Length: 175
Image: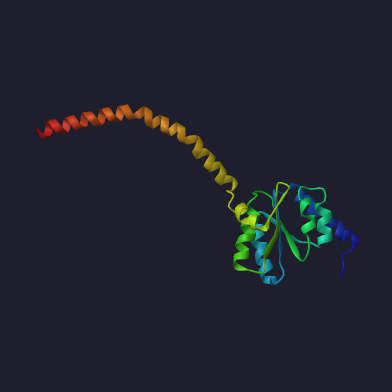
């Protein structure tokens, strides 16, 4: 049954609002997936903070028009699902990549990050991006390293003196 005009407008508005706040997007072909597999994918998407929607391509083009994902317009051909990452740019790539490993019918067609359209093979590189917490952890480790090295360097003369005195004591006790 065809959608009514007001339902189409609601879908376009919803997808446009999500695309306006998203960090990255992937369009993947879902042809060949069963309903159970799509339900599994949707549940995984909800758990990982990814917005997943199957939308008619004409409605998707309208929704993406005034967003940074407008570069996807030309590639919206065939049965595609749109997945938008809301919190972590790599979350959507990890979700689709992991799902596609188990379900070969799920094939990535478009990858967009920061308004730049990338080849579908770039999903692997996007999936390897650290999460926000991992990136903060890595930054803190880099910032902490010089301070730790300074403390070890400043403590070394005292430690060397203690080791030397201990060696002299051991030598005198042995003699």
